[in-house]
Length: 536
Image (tube, rainbow, N blue to C red; front, top):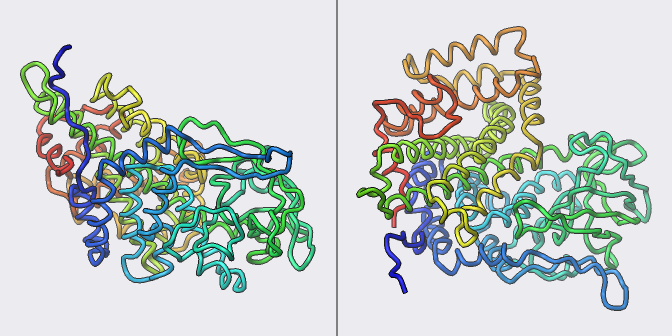
């Protein structure tokens, strides 16, 4: 038999926190340095070979729907592989579903973002129920009785996978169901109705995409007598019966295989009103802001893992008498990928800090930049994961590698919680309707008379002041440039000069880096790659 030679070792047995210089800097800079011990512990556990194997197993054995028992009684249960439950246990132990609410302190949202950023590199599917549970808390607090009953379970760190009434469980997770077959993102076309009954409401209708259907309760939009309203619909009724939530099928998705997404019908399902009747979208929109933040975290996570895998491979693989990492064109490609991943990370953690702050400037910043960051970062993950796969060649194209999973996962964050067009139009609305938006952005962009950035900022300022700023057909271009300006400003302030120089030269001067490996002459590509290498 031939001898296996020149094959890189698997990237495992490393610490995802201490081995990521950009992440460590972001955590300290954005106010969560007090949690470095917790992140070090989590990062070490996530990097273990057996934890990495859980991600592969959860995708190899996706969830299965049990709609009926053998006698024909409805069950509407979804069975998950033990690997899924092991990952969820790890996530809840780390507080990634609710810790900023359960133990609020400066930097709490940044700390949680860092934990999710690391977990998503090992398996992204579990981020879905974590994100929805995290985002549900501000919405649930709009009904004091509901909050009193549900929040203690949501704050628990003891994962309970059993399908039983929430009052019998050690913890609870919350999902949501908004979109319907006929409308998608156009929520005002929803036809699901809510009829007052039994001191609450009964829901009749359907949801076209209800993810994580084994959550314990769901925030649902339905039409009540006074208009579209927000409801909490538990899987079990108060008297301990299975709620009338019929799971028609699980979606056969491109990626996100470990996580279940379902089509459901409601046949008089019990639900409680959250917020004011007739104001369902304003009630649930705060949840959407937090889950959009998580989309940016998730896509940044995918990019980090893709770059880590690519750099690791190139450092250990020899071709044409040199390590791949030392081949000039490959060095350029890797450095370009690393720039994109670092720019995504610095913006994501700056945005997470805004959720830790309550002043007016922070509220304005997150109102404008949350949809902007979600749009651009999630879009860039698609190209980063594809290019990084190519670095590994054929070895990256086979399913034993994590690269195909990263590539298939990349589109979901762009689609979930509002597609790219929806995000960009939301940014236009935010710029128009949020007092002080221009001043807050100007302060964020301000890096002094910085020649690498100022010409781009001047052009952007002209466009923001121009009458045609509201041109919807140009919304993507405007939002792209808003994000690039902020990423450049953050890197100029916080990254080494070689990183900031290369980003400004490649993104602000010659374009947005549409094709990786086109960094101009004069950049220190080797230093950028070395900074991105996963430390073992």
